[in-house]
Amino acid sequence: MTEPDVTGPARADLRAARPGTPAGRTTSAPSPGSTAGSAVGREPDDAGRGNRLWPDDRGTLPAPARLALARLVRGPYLAAETDPDTWRALLTNEDVVRERLADQYLDLVVDADSQVAFVRDVPTADAPRVVREVALTFLDTALLLHLRGLLLDAPDSRVAVSRDEVADHLGAYRRRGGASPMDFSRQLDATWARLVESGILEPLGGDRAAVSPVLRTVFGADQVAALSTEYARLAKES
Image 1 (cartoon, rainbow, N blue to C red):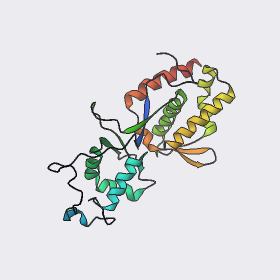
Image 2: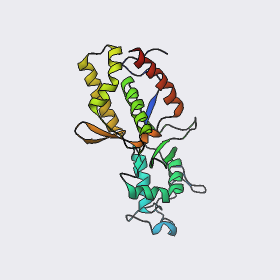
Image 3: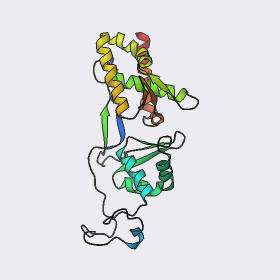
């Protein structure tokens, strides 16, 4: 495996999906027996009228289930800790939410232990890619692996880190890549900002941030194992 360069993209072909952020709008397929345009000018069935939220509302789900669906599609994830009411609505209406997401080529992932949920593209080769993916730099990936390790080692699944702590951990990779302290600081600022924007880091004030429990689930075990081995080797050689 070619040694990664801290100033460039990660050599490992790892792309971190930002769960729930669609790359473009998709439309649901018509239900069996319906015809294109049949809903135009026609009142919805009586069964859905009690769930109307506006005069021309054609939806049939109750408001809490719709909110859970919308939060999942908007992303990056839904967490019980920050939105307990919507989390309960998701669990109550999980089957129908899964159906509506499947209509958009999206799969629902629910981590009951961490109490987080997000959406990802369905694992079918001929399905369109709906979730927007963000390419990770070497530094992004190294930090994600470190944060995930801290999260898995935490007895209560709660982890907070500071930018200085992160800089100390990643310093070995800077020395190996030969980046100047100023260049490394700029790269670290960009990495920190990307993880905050994606919801992986949740600002606590100052230079500290909490690590989202979604990091337990969003990466596959095979990806993590392969990258962890390689990055540990590079850090040791540094």
